[in-house]
Image (cartoon, rainbow, N blue to C red; front, side, top):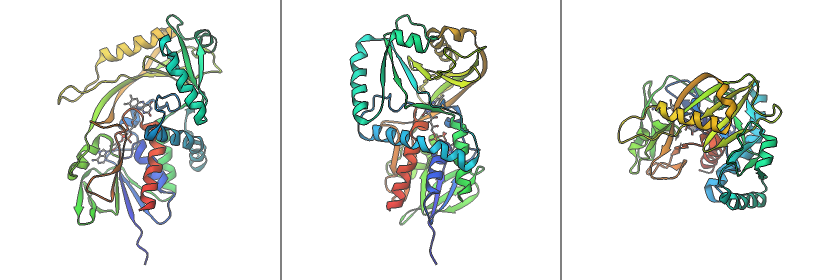
Length: 364
Ligand SMILES: Cc1cc2nc3c(=O)[nH]c(=O)nc-3n(C[C@H](O)[C@H](O)[C@H](O)COP(=O)(O)OP(=O)(O)OC[C@H]3O[C@@H](n4cnc5c(N)ncnc54)[C@H](O)[C@@H]3O)c2cc1C
């Protein structure tokens, strides 16, 4: 009788869900996803879903490869998931406009434009007057110009995660959202399985996609990974009418503040970046949110008239002393894969992470 390998994924944020869906395309494996809470509740539930790949300054190596792979995959993934599940995944394909306030940076941006053209991606420089024509909601004072990336986009992270779960479920992946994973069980061949609040579960492969919970999971390794929380606050605002031109509603970003159109004259604004101090748990600082709101209103004065309809915070999983994300074998364990520490780009990098994990398992 053929033995079907059992792959256990710990965590069902955007990363665990994307991996589950990707693994559901491999024949002859059994996949189980475990989480202690429903999907998309932790960092994923707080995210704004802005995918800044082409417009990022990452131009080579792993950082660019992951971004490029994700952007290419997103183009087919969204229609595929919508067709498979019948669920709507709100997304904005109108690109990202990044405002520039320092004329001296023009050269740096031109180099990026040239590099992206060589790589087959479009990126445009807009003079300040062109920004005024295309995004009249933006305050022109001090503006040097903008970079426009038509290929970057925005997607609702919770809706995407739920669609990935639904599609993976239809393809036979098992999900349990009431199970706390306590530890990996070490054996002679690596990891034999996991201890959970629902008892021991045997596994041939374990994928740790537990965000901040990954630190505890890796303590069995001679080289554990530490993932620290970096808090982000954001808000949802409603206006009487859409900002700027109703037919052109890209994500606008300036001074690291995103203005994210959601339709119906509603916008997400965020996010703060708040690090923990010492060993104290990081808590949301109202002054930091005020600064973001003031910054957003300075970029786009019409936001001063908006009504606040929601406010939240979340904790981004940031790997300590190493670049994000961590996608590799857990040292000492040839059958435990880490897919964690995506920090500020987990939504962007989820498809590429899932492909990397599938390729890893498929070739082993
Ligand atoms: C305010 C804010 C804005 C953001 N904006 C963007 C953006 O615009 N674009 C972008 O790409 N990224 C953005 N991010 C970052 C993004 O949210 C994260 O990188 C991403 O969500 C990480 O996904 P994850 O699945 O690894 O972690 P999480 O979503 O945190 O999921 C981890 C899961 O593991 C589970 N878990 C942990 N430990 C255990 C355990 N022991 N047992 C069982 N289950 C466990 C948790 O319950 C959780 O469901 C933003 C984040 C924040 C906070």
